[in-house]
Image (cartoon, rainbow, N blue to C red; front, side):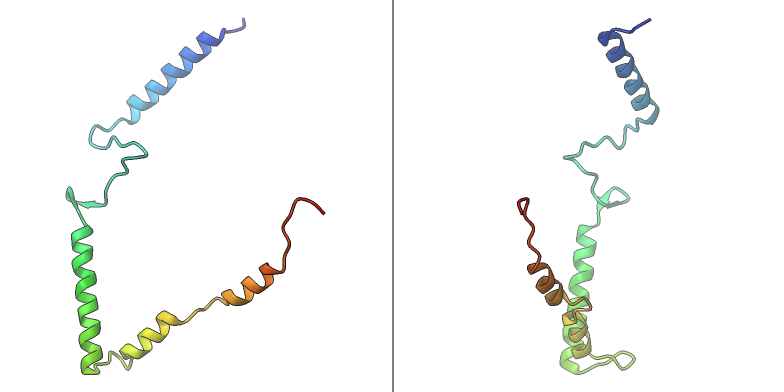
Length: 105
């Protein structure tokens, strides 16, 4: 027996509804546009992360002004590590710049 398009569509719709009902959680119903925020106990962690970032920056500036080191590492070494490029991007750009990508020969 061959099923009609309407019967197949109805069966698929019922299956989707059953799957949604099985996994439905009333607390977390989000769409792609409304991604769940990063939360701890129902509140956003953005403020906490911002305060931590400000404190770390303030500590860095203080250590730089007072020439404080931690296990022999100073602020200048930290800045050098931030500037360091472990991957030679200039060489890759040079090599890729020579490659001609086109559909016609």
